[in-house]
Length: 62
Image (cartoon, rainbow, N blue to C red; front, side):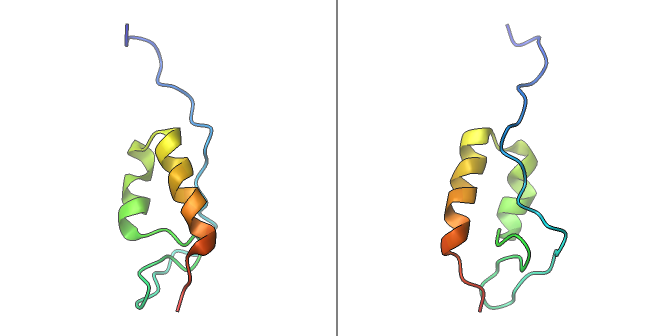
């Protein structure tokens, strides 16, 4: 067990290539993730990634 390939990721990054942080909110102007979320993204599983994506529509950039 555990010797097979890693599971495929189905939840893709919301990055759109506008990688600038809003100083007031701390959210990326392009994808609305925080620096911590962006940094952890590759280590997150699909459940964690989907939880972040579910929060994005409600985030406001000042």
